[in-house]
Image (cartoon, rainbow, N blue to C red; front, side, top):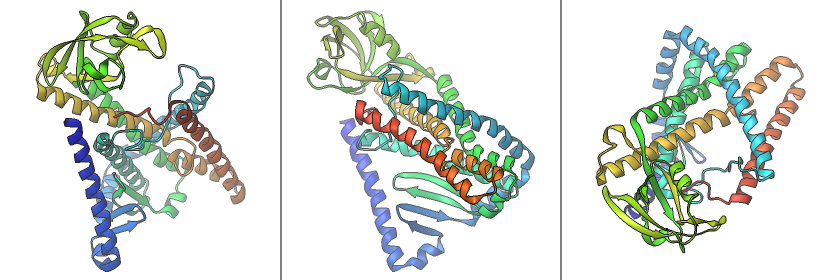
Length: 396
């Protein structure tokens, strides 16, 4: 029932977004002066709300704290180049691992709501995207002001379902900025995302404690489909405590098809004992298999010994929020620094090329060549991942 309600809520959310787009489209055709009055524009699939109030706030912060912000931007260069190295190393080493079917290979694929993630995950993704985009763009704007580059426009944006902000500096002034300051400006967005990632990781580690294994999905035709339910939390199996996925994996390695296991499960805050007969693992015929997909389950440290339905649902929601923010902040921090134009990493390479060469044609050829090469490597990761694993790496 909860899953059905989540889908209904998500569909209502998507319907509201669609209604907003329809309303703005009609206003753009019939009453464009109203949109102009409030600084609202519809540019393709992107809704922009521009205001000069943000410009002033951003410029005031940049001017007031000019020295510490400039110093932070210079530090972000070191972190940004490190993130660039991590990204370059990952897409190359992972591509090799995928080609040779190494167990270290990691699936790489885009996030497609309704295709490879459930629609019920969409609100968490939208929230996480806002946590990524708003600080990222704000950091760019503050750094630009600290380097005495004027802000051309700023405001909020909605790109289909992704909410965020934007800051657009005066490109001509930015182009005349010294190379080191320019690289600092491009690096500071990913640096901010990386700091957010560290903060979220520390917060989660301090506030949440592993307290079992969450059932995300049961597979048809297997024993778990008749016994376990989505959002059940496995606490114990055959007297063995199960606190993490590693505990579950270790235990299942000791089983074989036909074994009976007794699971202590928390369902809606109530403890239950369930008997399940294991099937044959399709990946290893000698090992037992429940037929379910699992995830970590954490509870707030101050509730770790208390079990009730509200706390269980609350803990699941908090984990989903943390997980999406954690995932997107680190992903954007690294991927944004890849040498692909117009990513910030690509703009850094372009700035260096502009400083190193005078011939505009040569600069553009090198920029396109670098961008094309790393784009091919990235897309090779995605295409081969989908070919091998399908569009199923992201699960609801």
